[in-house]
Image (spheres, one colour):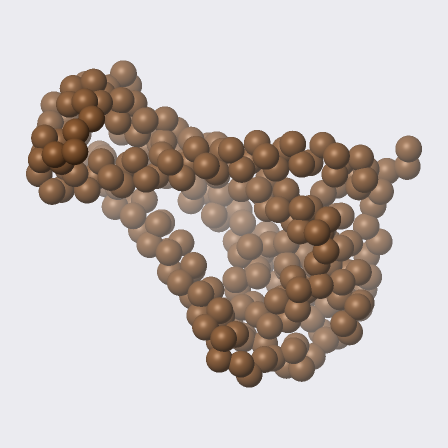
Length: 251
């Protein structure tokens, strides 16, 4: 079986395409475009929250914060696990930004599309680029969408496992300790004041999101097995090949 490999197309770069011709004037598209800014704002707030939590974990007494509960993982250990996962998240961000800078410098369209940071850079600085990327998305077939779903699910596995994983495991132990001490009640005052209730709600939400993300990653792996039989090679190269093909359809 011959291993599949993408054939690089030199003229598939932003230097050779006028993205302005793909700009759409509709109000609905402008609303969709504004969603990009909300996503970026959310990401920035998440990183700021990580910094805030990292400082709070070192300086605060977590036992007092949670009403004296004693989870399986002691707070003296969990605070440093939290801090370590936050540091790793910033390291991964630095690596992503560094790769994105090289992609942006190359001007390669397919590589830019497969880089979250590069895509957001282009779309934040230019509405026309966002419309151009949307045109590529609209050209995708069902098999293409599956390939990109698997690719982006795999792309975030390091952050999910090494950054979110340790924190959410600790959060799960905290929730379990609260359950053992307080049980499940509809009267939320049993769990403490408003601040503690909000903290429990946030932890429950983040743990739920983590579990869903983990299931999606597992689902992506199951989809990858039959997909692997078709691409017989690197998934990123295959996704770039798809973009090159769809690009040819509307240029």
